[in-house]
Length: 344
Image (cartoon, rainbow, N blue to C red; front, side, top):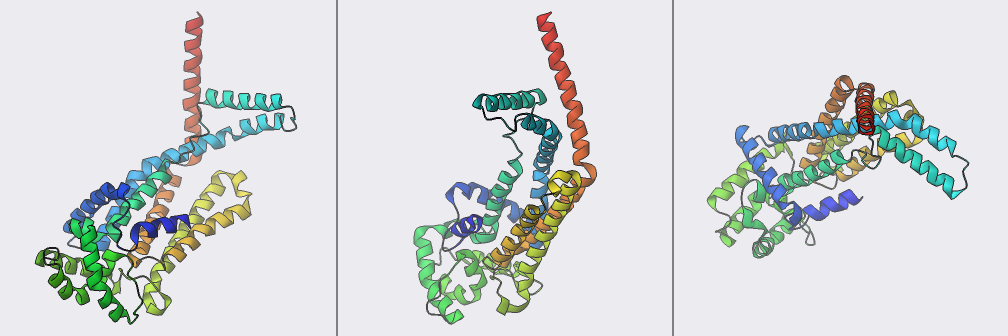
């Protein structure tokens, strides 16, 4: 739930995002602007290419994470042997000896148990924040209207569009979320009033950019700026596909893990919970955010499936484990030779 609260806090209302990530929004916005130009304003094609490229950038980190996990798996028998040796120890001094032996093992093997390969997760969160910039704030970061988020401008825009929005949806108490996406979604209704009220901001050039961009946000007749709802018909396919692709990625990851680490496969109930948790969570969130976000998750999940297959095929954990053993043996012998030379 933290992730959902964090995303909505960053994207809802008239926010232009979290200040700390604004340089990243600008960078990703420029990247998407270039891709849109290259692909003739085909937004979703540009987003697919963007997702694939970012996944490729993260691939070395994912590979490093797998190698770290392979090393941890290789050391498990030695770790368990030490733990078994002190299983019934009650004396604090015995516990201290166990810790010392564990540290000696880690030092001998060149392994840091605190470094469990969290890099990919951190970078994925950073990239997710960048994606927020290009999905939630396109007028500012892709179309270049940087002053739209100025306090005075947002206040005037809200004063202009809120009454029109409430009339459009037939709800006198309705409030606007996803400010810039709402402008794009209802631009036909807002345009004349915005041009009349803020002519210096909503110039002919910006209006033309918004209209072109709005057209690009329609996919197979679906308005991807809209938040999916069961009553809106076919657009619910976005949350459904988000769930199915996330489930497929989780199942694939679980099967690969069970194959490469049978001991982990014995924990069936925990693995089942983990396998279902994220797909169900993404299904729920996909009904709370614009469909374009769900589309990004679908593409990201599909790319993750392919990436996992590639890693399992060409960089299998057993191969990584064997490589780690060879490297550790070479390093250990080199250290031993150095010690002998020093003593000699």
